[in-house]
Structure formats: structure tokens, C-alpha cells
Length: 255
Image 1 (cartoon, rainbow, N blue to C red):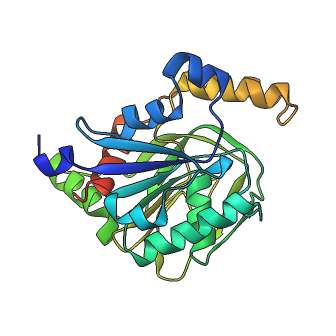
Image 2 (cartoon, one colour; image 1 turned 90 degrees about the vertical axis):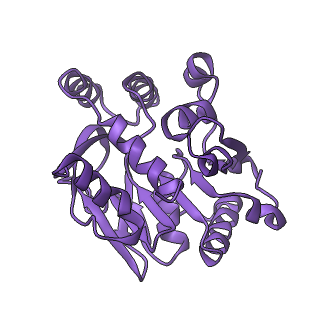
């Protein structure tokens, strides 16, 4: 294994409390993200930003990259921790540090850097969705170009697990849309070679999604008919977890 990769250090900025299911089955979201996006020998530090736990600003230089997780909170809210996270993102952008945002992380990246986010006009998106790659010629996406060379032809679309009711309305100045879907216009965006946002969940497994669907149903956030339709759809499709994992790993490791 490449020594440079082994020595890398990352910070997981966790924006949601561990669910009982994830704690019991996986030991927490940190393990979920490390299993899906990490490499052997790397160091991952956990910061529960939703509880006001942030990395020391004097130690940001020690990290090779930062990953912002999904969340049940709104990326457009003015909660103190969301505002502090936005300021941290602006600082990391100025430092040209690698920042990967997933779902809420994708949205708060956009908000912090000058874009607009809000409730999705088409309502909840839950399930496995085909995402079309519309731009793979960006500095951030060298891995997509390499994939095309290695596999002769880059897939026009990749399936990913989605569970969100918010979306990106407008990307920041200087950003580029990389992927879209028939449900969400900005499924993936990038700024330079250091900012990458993904609306879907490359780290989720079907069982995690099923638990989340049940929790949404129990809290009357979605209707039973909708939940049953989504569950049926999960029996017929599989997310491209390996491809998404490779995309994220390649971005974080600068490959």
C-alpha cells in the first residue's frame, strides 16, 4: 500500500446522533464511514459537531481531509453549531483542504460557500436512485477520468441510496455540477480539486436505510404507502457502493 495513503489523517464531522440501530450493529457512524470510505492505516478522528464538538482551529493543518456527514437537521438553519460549521467550511476552503460533504454535508457546503439550499420542491427522496454523471472533466474528478481509462467506458449513471427532503437550489460561484438525477438537479458538485458534495449516501447499506425508513414512518414524517413502495423498490435494485466508495477515496487521497 502507498505509504502516503497510510499516513493520512481525516476528521469526521458528525452532524447527527448515532441511532440505536447503528450503534448496535456498527458501533456508530464513525465505523460506517470508515468501512465505506477509509483505507487501512489511516487515522480518523471523530467530532460530534451537532453537540458543539469541533476540531481546534489551530490544528486544522494536521488533517488531510474532512468529511461532513448527513443529518436530520436543516443545513439552512441558524442553529449555532450549523453557523460554526459553516465558518469552519469557509476556513477549510481558504486553506484548500479536502472537504467531502454527504447529504446534509453536501447542502451545508453549498450554503457556507455562497450557494442556496432549502426544502425540495418535489418532496422526500427515499430509496435507490440512478444518478447521471454530467461532468467528469474537473480537477476534483480526476478519478472519474482515470476510471474511464481503466474500464474503457465510464458508466453514464451510478445508483446511490438517497434519503433527504432538502436540496441544493443554487451552487456557489466557481462550482460545477458533476451529477444530476430526475429528482434532484444537483446530486453532486465540486469546487476546484478540494471541495466535493454528494447528495446521496455512498456510505449507507440497505439495512441502515430500512431502519431510517421505519423511524420516519414511526414519527409520521412519511406515509405508510410511500414507505412500502420504497421497500419494494429496494428489493429490485442495488446501490453501486463500491464505485461510490472508490470515488470518495480517490478524492480524499488526491488520486
